[in-house]
Image 1: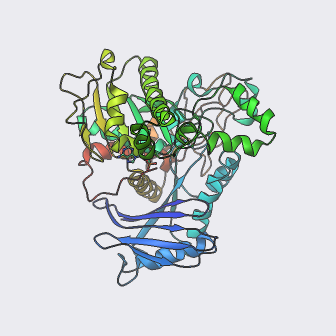
Image 2: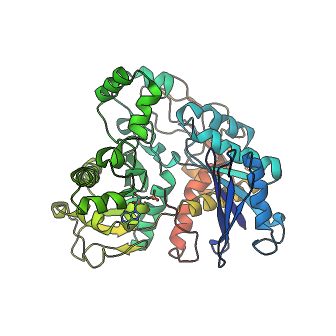
Image 3: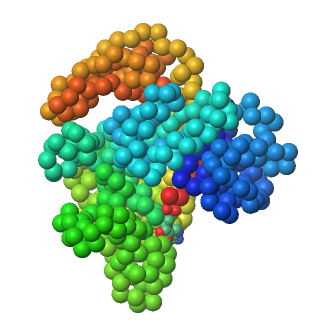
Length: 490
Ligand code: AMP
């Protein structure tokens, strides 16, 4: 089964073609400047040098058409015919509260993604353009959506609520959502696999540290807390994002700048490593400047290290322990000195790093000492592979029609009684049972209730099946090798 994985930004499109028989990447590429003068494509067939072409791409539809042409190109292609494609898997940034797992695209799913555009005004429309472009070019190809937010939907209200008037949650869904969910899911499952441990028995802190960074507490295989919140600006400082900030500072900036867009730019684009160091948003540049004695660069570096340390401590406290600490993404996978600095002084909580083992980049390595109670690991993330696995699972589950519909209760969310709506084609909630036997039964459970409202029931059978499948599969699968989908840096 060959799956095309797509990550569409407002003017870009990243793709990978993955053969699910061995999870190898057959081809990958990047289209840039869609709709802008100077658009181009860089395409790489595995085993060959990349080919770069300047082509006019007015919209994502032309870009997708060109990508598909490249995939069947005599010289650079990897498919004899587009009929070999089984499905397209799309990365979607925001699924709000409606999407707790991946889903096969239907008109209702599209509506659901459109509904949460206000929560991700830049990303979700671009992601939707990718789906619509595929539908326009290959109308029969199934599309599957995989959400950055979905993994964190297991956070309890005490973790996802902000301490503001509850009405803002009830009416406007202002709450913490969390992002990088596919990455946190992948590395936490991979950690359990590598350690040959049952994920249900592990308390893991996963540190996805890149240009954007988030840290997640994964207890028993579920995200129970994560550092990004309503937007991707919360948490530790990032390349250009401010991280945790007293709300009074935002009010101060609003009064001073008198322009919401200018305030947003201050906290999203001019802050973080760049804002503090005044040098760069890239940690490598900051580290070089710090070494040369630049005080602000030293401060930026220290603030990020200190921030990560504090999150690890607080998540260990929140979970009542920590068994595994994972580093991933650009900084986490490559920052040897950075990892050392974060773990320094954490012996008191059972974290001891072996300097020699830590001297590695971009590889799966346990970097803790044998006597370290907490296993410290470097695991390159691989969001494309998760998207491809979910896509395969959704397509396979959808191919086996559901037979029965049943109703099952589930834990209610705060201050409300859950009600079960009619299970519709796309809003059939599923219980654990359904996840285990997705083909036979569609189980409707009492939805995690929305406050003061009757809650709609959400998950699709296929979607819930996915939640179970990759985890199961992952246990059976060998560690990712060079052949598998290339780690993505975000
Ligand atoms: P990502 O967004 O995952 O691509 O990560 C980008 C971040 O990773 C940038 O801040 C880079 O400076 C950082 N990074 C990449 N390589 C290294 C390295 N060798 N040491 C420290 N940071 C690195």
